[in-house]
Image (cartoon, rainbow, N blue to C red; front, side, top):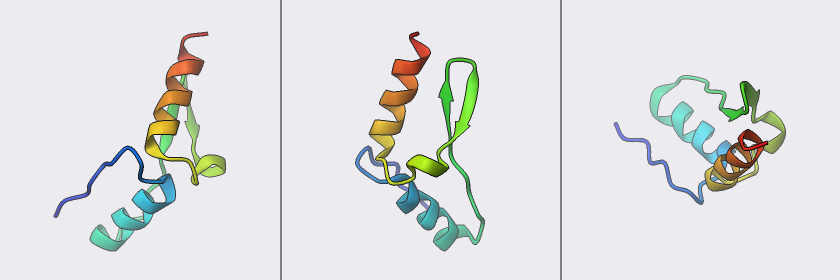
Length: 60
């Protein structure tokens, strides 16, 4: 079984793919500084945008 992590894939698409292929429910988190934030409100963002946001907030 392979789950592809493509930069332009949206978070909700990855969560659906994980469920479809494994039967497991997943929740993604993004590191922001020293905290981990649920991506619930930004599940429509791409993985690339999530990574960029986390990186930018970690630089503050």
